[in-house]
Image 1 (cartoon, rainbow, N blue to C red):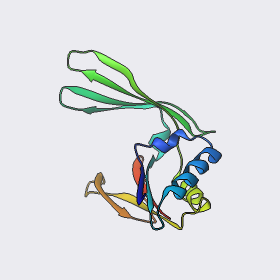
Image 2 (image 1 turned 30 degrees about the horizontal axis):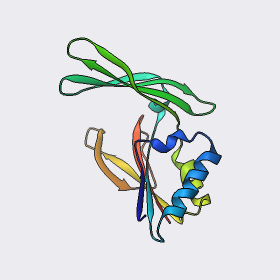
Image 3 (image 1 turned 90 degrees about the vertical axis):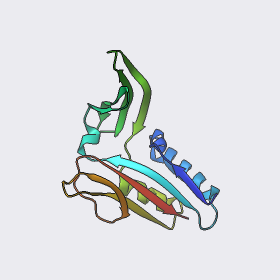
Image 4 (image 1 turned 120 degrees about the vertical axis):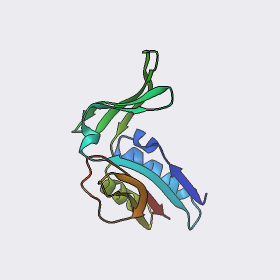
Length: 155
């Protein structure tokens, strides 16, 4: 492949360094000589706090439920719930059992698995300090309480 994409934090299902390294080595082997692997990542202090975040949609509310976090293993359990206009709620429509991987440990592991370099794309902020949806290559992130970033790894 020229490009592989591991999105929606899917690669966080690998909870041990050994498991993730096996996956990354397979990605590396599956790429053409100048191929890239794109991975999304999130973090910040709020990523470690059990909480619910609601987002209004057309006809329903989407609820992101960070249910549990273990600071010793970085394992996190999250759910997506839906709340409807009629007052009903679909709890745990989707479940996620992940390990939160940090940017530096992931970039280090990508290098160990053969990737020649990594670039982190960090989201900018608007004049009010809110995320602006504009991701740029960066070696310095801000101290956002919650953030999403993308890692591009080059074969």
